[in-house]
Amino acid sequence: MEQQNREDVLILAIETSCDETAASVVKNGREVLSNIIYTQIALHTKYGGVVPEIASRKHIEKINQVIEGALEEAGVALRDITAIAVTYGPGLVGALLVGVSEAKAISFATGIPLIGVHHISGHISANYIEYRELEPPFVCLVASGGHSHLVVVRDYGEYEIIGRTRDDAAGEAFDKVARAIGLGYPGGPKIDKLSKEGNPDAIPFPRAKVGENEYDFSFSGLKSAVLNYLNSCQMKGEEINQADVAASFQKAVIDVLVEHSLHAAKEYGFDKFAVAGGVASNTSLREAFEKECAERGITFYHPSPVYCTDNAAMIGAAGYYEYVKGVRHGYDLNAVPNLKL
Ligand code: KG4
Ligand code: ZN
Image 1 (cartoon, rainbow, N blue to C red):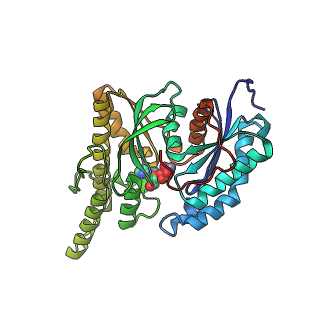
Image 2 (spheres, protein in one colour):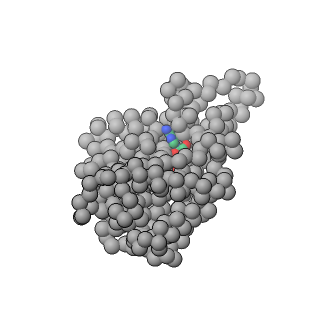
Image 3 (cartoon, rainbow, N blue to C red):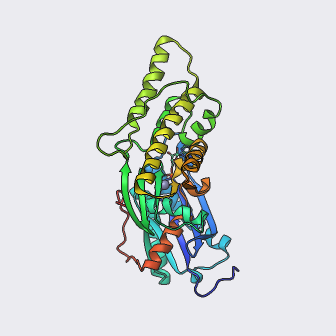
């Protein structure tokens, strides 16, 4: 049994917004006592993407097991838990409902307070786990399968979105391009790996500029440029070098993410910059930020890959700061698929 002080805040966190069934116990917002993730990726791969009905059904099957695993690995019992934090949006409504219903049921049965957490706030808070000294304010790039946001983190749980994608999210573009070159789902890790064998300057794919807001992104034009390139090679009977396409596409995405993010850090006057979300685990993206931040005297924060992709520990970290602020939700907490940050 893990030794706890009476003042310690232990959050049991639950995350089921997409295709990971996850639970975690987090101590005082920064120390992960357990982090259990049941990933459904293999189930969805054959369909080329996440099938919402299958995701919900699998969450129902796995949720109790994952929560029990998280408590056991942490060496604690439910009576030791201070509060239950659960992702209530954004995400797939049926998937979110499984986590939210489970959290409400445990809260109702035990009297442990309930806290709803925003999924993106979770992704950003993954940085607090990895860097115990990190405190707001800072700029954070959130790049995942569903979101590409540039966020000024004013304080714990206080966010100002200064840029967002106008169309596809960065991860979505990775997944679509991967499918087009025959790599399968999920595309991000596959493109990341294959790119290492390709030339990032082989094909001059476009770096999109978006009208009025200099911090906004657009990736659908880039995706179309890759598809057009593949079509034209096919029509001319030219062989496609998959690795060159992957590396050139990836470079185009990274260039835009780096340029916008570091421009924002400079304009807003921050010397701390963080990344979050599945795409933030991309090795070339991390190298690029590492280099560019070092040149500008900016400290670069990047969670380990396991805390970049969906997990519950990040929800526990975000939930802790909500708890400290006094946020408590009632049993009318519902899943909100398009929840705003
Ligand atoms: O944050 P996440 O696990 O789920 C969402 O909240 O969307 O992000 C998943 C996305 C997928 O689009 C996946 O292809 C992408 O993150 N991803 C990557 C890498 N690992 C995951 N993209 C680029 N490089 C990677 N290594
Ligand atoms: Zn996510």
